[in-house]
Image (cartoon, rainbow, N blue to C red):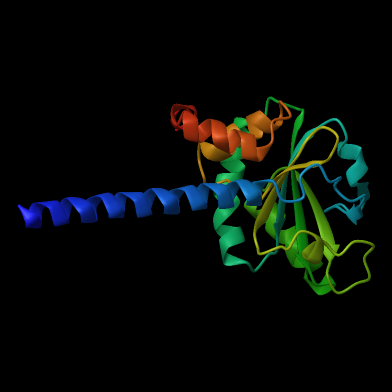
Length: 203
């Protein structure tokens, strides 16, 4: 009898510890997703693959999924086919833009252009030369660990930091659609936890 009581006690303690750990993880994700919330995306003027200078302010009025990457980053490269599939899913919605900013040394620009062409990568592609003077230090501002993704609302303000990767099927689709409704990534996450079926519906 004592043995049974002891085992029951251990089971209860384990369950409580597990719940506390899950709760801490939940709170940690909410904090991460809310990082830099409502801060305007910097006014950048960067070169695209044709050599034209593109202002990020031109994206005002669009929901933007931002991808910070570089050409020799294995995790970034792994996401390419998923990114293409994700863009294909949203291709009929002209109000959703996929913005890829390559952060790399200037001598890699030709390889960047070549890679985009060979891989058939869609979306808006801009080049940020990390070894040239820049008005905004993107690496520091967004604490970038490649790849890093952001969600911007129609006012080009951050509503989702460390957004889901293209390979996170379902979750990334839901997050982008919610962002288009000006719903923050943190709130989208809360909704998905309360109703997991909203994620499963995309798979």
